[in-house]
Image (cartoon, rainbow, N blue to C red):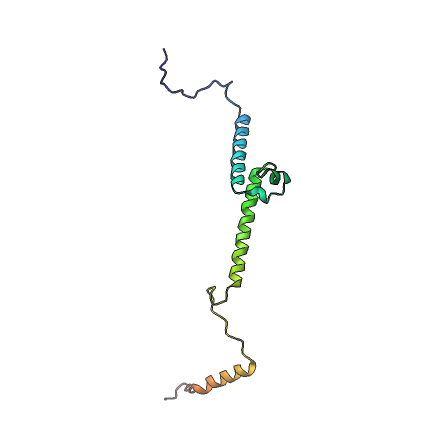
Length: 130
């Protein structure tokens, strides 16, 4: 007499087990359902090019994995573009770089060089004692 509380070992005869193709197809369907659910939660259907998805307010058409990955890629690109615009809109002193000095005219540059040269005493030649 068999013990009723004993768990099944999970063993099945070979003819009752599914083939590799059947197991693979079930896994593909499981993955598609998972990605379709994720896509629906992220509301990917709003930007989906398929009109069916937009009418049904859910992923109905193409490969849901492709829809979901396209949505993630577009979302990342949009985020990076927003960050680049925000970085460009900030004044130079706030974005970690030193502010560039205003450009000098040639006359101003010559005057600064002459003033700096006049302020320094000339260096003694080699062998001269100061």
